[in-house]
Image (cartoon, rainbow, N blue to C red; front, side, top):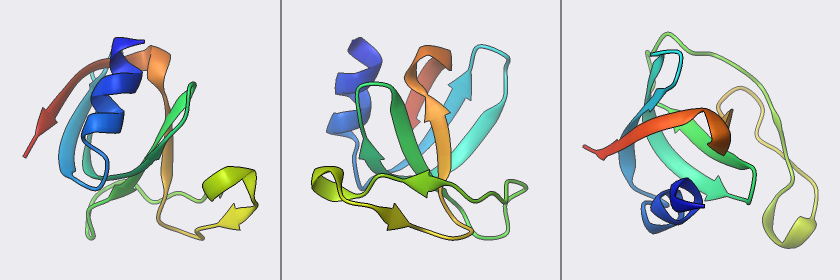
Length: 81
């Protein structure tokens, strides 16, 4: 639950996230729910993905090629940058 509150506190801020498998992701947290953090990676980064994002208030949303969905259970560290 600490990861959820940390991500929520850093919403709309630029962060670097490290996962338990030692992968690092840099970008801006656009949203957080109880299971996932939704990260917009920096332009020119190595991560390019597409994801269905539930959108605000449970509505549907599609962010195309710029939202990375990470499980909160895989987060090891989050640093504000």
